[in-house]
Amino acid sequence: MNPINILQFRELSHIRIIRKLRTLSFLLVIIPIIFSACKENEPDPPEEKSGKIILNFIHQINGESIQFDTLKYINAAGNPYLVNEIQYFVSDITLFNNNGTEILIDDWKDIHYVDTDIPDSHRWEVFDKIPEGIYDSINFTFGIPEGKNFSFMFVNPPESFMFWPEFLGGGYHCLKLNGKWLEEGQQIQTTPFDFHLGRGQIYYSYPDSITGFVPNEFNVSLPGSGFQVISGQIIDINIVMNIENWFQYPHTYDHDIWGGYIMQNQEAMQLVNENGQNVFSTEFIN
Image (spheres, one colour):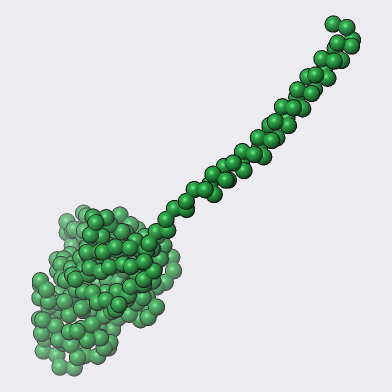
């Protein structure tokens, strides 16, 4: 190939490369425009129709708001008593839709702490959007489920004060209901009681040889808790703790028998567990 032909060949090759680069540049510009135009023509997905719920925790005795630190109540066993404070956890709140689906409240938090001394804890503005529909019932776990109830997961008070001693199984209390009662034969002098529920113990020999632990959290199926969610609506739901039922159904709980401290007494805590499943009811504000 003579020198002229070589130069011509190089020029032709250069021209072809430039043309290909121009074609590629054109495609890089036009393809996103085409895809963008296609997307603009696609209809937006329909917005999910949903509402919100707010859970309010109410504490009553015999249908009336509790009066703390007042010796005015008598339980089913005939024990005059008063209540100083109540603290507990509720978790894994589940809404059962009548179409067969279930909604677990867990988008922001799945464990809520309630403390009668902390008014802000009585109101839980649930973060989750609740799909529009009719719901048959509300369930929740009283306490923290065994698979989630680990020691030291709460590092700050007040939740951290709910710890359950490590040597008794660790994790956290389900319930602290603290008060006083008049022991049989007493007229004035009251005796403190710690009506506490948490992990129970199985003993080989009391009090040192623990061979196993018993989870004492329990499921609550709220009676009469069906409701309807309409898009954009906020529903207030009162979850009422009927405190007298801790002591009367299905078992009559007698402070004179069980004493003031039951953390290491699984037999007593089993009564508390079974009675607790009948403690809660619901009210709808709107």
